[in-house]
Amino acid sequence: MKSTNRRMALRTLAGAGAATLAAPHIATAASHTTTWRMQTSWPGGAGLQIFKDWANSIVEKTGGELAIQPFGANDVVGDFQLADAVKNGVLEAINPFTIYYQGIIPAATFLTSYPMGLRNPHEFDVFYYGLGGIDIARELMAAQGLMFVGPVHHGPNIIHSKVPIRSIDDFAGRKMRLPGGMVAELFSQIGAETTVLPGSEIFPALERGTIDVADYVGPAVNYALGFSQVTDYIVMGPPGFMSVYQPVDIMDITVGMDAWNALSPQMQQFMEMETHVYSDMHHAAIQKADQEAWVKFEEDGTEVTRLSQDDVELLTEIAVPIWFDYANRDPNAARVFKMQLDYMQSGSLGYVDPALTQGLELKL
Image 1 (cartoon, rainbow, N blue to C red):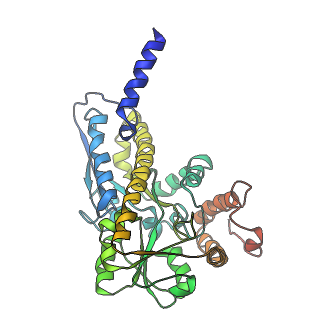
Image 2: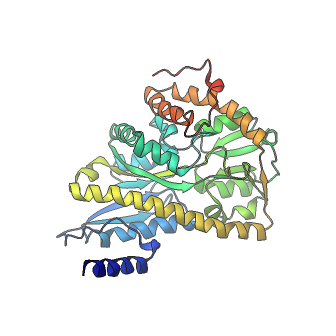
Image 3: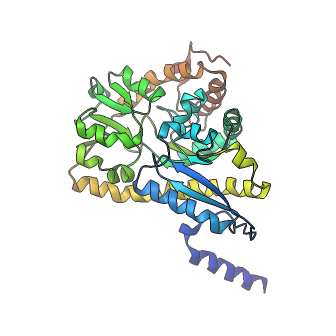
């Protein structure tokens, strides 16, 4: 009888399909519904739709105890005002690109991918959930009145250009949009004229010619935003290394501490689990959409150009001192970076030749 019931359960799960993967429902027939206003950094495309679908599913999964009202980029506040909006009570929660915190939390530079650093999603999972990164992230966010629920994987960022770029030398003199921080400094050192813009302002800047090169997220979202209409080239790393500067773009789910503490312990645990689920679904759905977008870019005449392995090695030599510079600007940044550097120099990865760090010191 037990085996029969198990087979029936397995058939039910298989029939549901991977798209319905979710943390366990915790329906409790709540007497009232708590609603969080949550804004994402996605301005459109597959990313925004995936976010809205997930947010709208929460009320059913919690039996009406918690609902999320989703907003796209700039619907309530600007991308760079998201953390302040939560602290001021304009929003209860946000789904930003984690790099955007670097203005208020210097260590946030290392809570997401950076040039030539950790290169695969599972490596950041090891950092967050295996090496203790999640504890430091929550500690730093708590000091801002925020609860860092967890990271959300997106995928590599890519570069769109009006002109062909076939080596790092070709960035010299180009007006280039970047998210700021370490990424902007790397490209400044190879001669690009960098500017910081939120994602929602990239298309008009390219259209007007204010910039001629821009990084943003992946193919699916960028195609939906019309980048093939205003650029002719996509620049990537060697095969298998899609992005040399942000190979694992990370978003997150962050909640105001008052809103978080108002939840029951069971609901808090549910949201932590649901963030894991959302990260997996979000990452897979974005990659699926990317496969379809590549065909569309090709049909529009976009040419893909690739940097060489020699370029990768040169960029690494340039990047390592920048890593140390940013890490030494803040004790917490140094704490986070040390964890990642040890991992990158371990037998598990071996990304960083010890010779490149000789003479460089971390101020822990």
